[in-house]
Every structure is written in C-alpha cells, then in structure tokens.
Image (tube, rainbow, N blue to C red; front, side, top):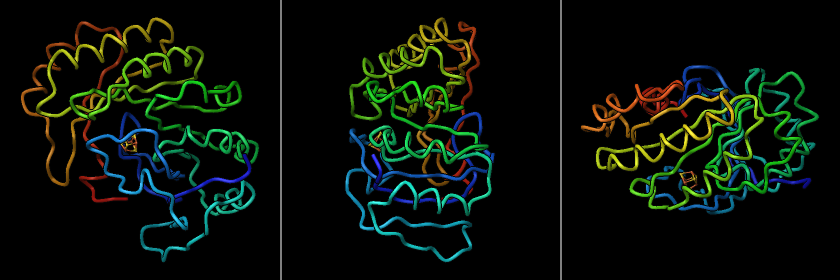
Length: 243
Ligand code: SF4
C-alpha cells in the first residue's frame, strides 16, 4: 500500500508503559476496528481531510492532505530527529502494509508498534523482524466495552519471536478482580512463549485524576505470583498535559 490516512505526526514524550518519559516521534494513523468506551481519540473512526504535523509543541502546525504517500511520509519524518518512532492510532495495524512500505526508509530508527492487539493476520515477517517494541493491549470487557480477549490471545501467539513485547491492560476502579486475573494469566501464557516481555497495568487516567480505587491493592496482592516484570503506571502525558 503506497498511501496512508494519517492524523498526526509529532514529537513528544512517551506517556505510556515502561518507556514513559522517553522522547518519541509519533506517527498516528486514523481509523480503528474497535470502539472502546474510554477512547480519547475522537477521530479514531473517522477519516481526516489532512494530517497535522508538529515538530515541537511550540511550532505552528503544518497540514498535509490525506491520503499521504509513502515518499511524502518519509520526507516529513526526515525532519524529525528523535531516534525513537512510535506507530500509533487509531489502530496502526489496519495500515500495516503502508508501514511495511516505509520500513526501508527508517534505517537507524528504533520502532515501536502501539496496537490494540486484535489484527493478527496483519502481522508479517517483515514487521516482526523490524519492529523493536510491540506495545499490545489486552482489552478488559468491563473497561473498554469490547470483548476481544480471544483476539488478543491469538495476536500475542504470533509474537512468539518478537524482539520485545509490552503488554498493557487498562483498568478502572470498577474492574472486577476476575478480569485483572484473566489478563495476568494471558500474559503468563505468553511469557512462556516469549520471555522478552513485560506487563503494565494502566489505571484509567483523566487530567489530574487516576481512577484506580481499591484495585491498586488487589494488583499488589496478585503480582508476586508471576515471574515476569509488572508495573502500574498512569498515562504520564495526560498528567504532564502533553500531546
Ligand atoms: S483501540 Fe484505541 S483507538 Fe481504537 S477505539 Fe479503542 S481506545 Fe480508541
């Protein structure tokens, strides 16, 4: 695929997971195959006329009409100097063919794929070889309103040989313990396939408010049963009020 629908290309600080705080360039695609209840991406399921390009939060944004060609996308990205590049969305794996097309022009970049973990058929050998970090959601039905845990499990099975995997599970103060356990148990299954993984519990984060409730205590009691690394981290970029 030579063209993509892109929402934004911008530099910021990684706000989620174990790499929170690290400078990243974000290539954010439009479109998503899910409709999560807590989605904070209002255009996730709508095409945008143009992509916003912002090198630094103090710059004036440029706008590039969609769809954007692979060549133009690489041209825009060449103006961004951070070594780390994150494909995000929406759901970037919907446009995985385009991502494959631009991989050759991203030599020297460290690449992260931030995905909802439901489109296993779009994982290709080229992506497996080149993506440095897969950040994969396990979506809990009580939080997201979506029941895709089987899809998440099948997706993870395809990442057996991935270089590094971060599994992320968003929870709220209302998430039942059974769902927290189900996520950990799925991660444990995956850890036996690929020990290059870590796990992040991410409380629903609103500006100045983290909705974890008693579940922080519940998680603390559960985590010592597992051999893999588990962190609890809010969405740092919302607290810092970054993009
Ligand atoms: S997967 Fe992400 S972008 Fe898609 S609807 Fe859910 S939260 Fe929004």
